[in-house]
Image (tube, rainbow, N blue to C red; front, side, top):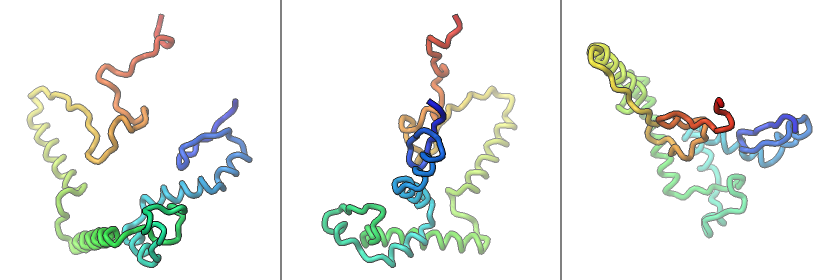
Length: 170
């Protein structure tokens, strides 16, 4: 059968040879999926600036759908969406200004979490005479439900992964 190439952007695989890979990487579906992936990490200010320069999509405003989807050159954001995005950008700018001025960062940031963790560790070391009960693994809030994660990212069940009968020692 030969080697297979798996494209993370498109979530599909195909036989890996020069022709197939070149055809896939230059294909419209791959380029669209790759652009959507990188758009997830764009700065809110850049998105706001881009959306404000676009005219509203008439078809999207009338029907709630557009045949062009993410490839449409018109904006699919409503006034409320633009207001929310604008508020988010202003909040990020205020936070950035606070950090530049040297002010304390609001709670809920990584610095706050690290500080609390250091306190917990120091308390645990001072109470090391007491036996520690292991804390079960939990995903942070906002992570996808465990059943939506691929098997390789899921935590093993309490007894470990079951061994298929054909791989057990006999």
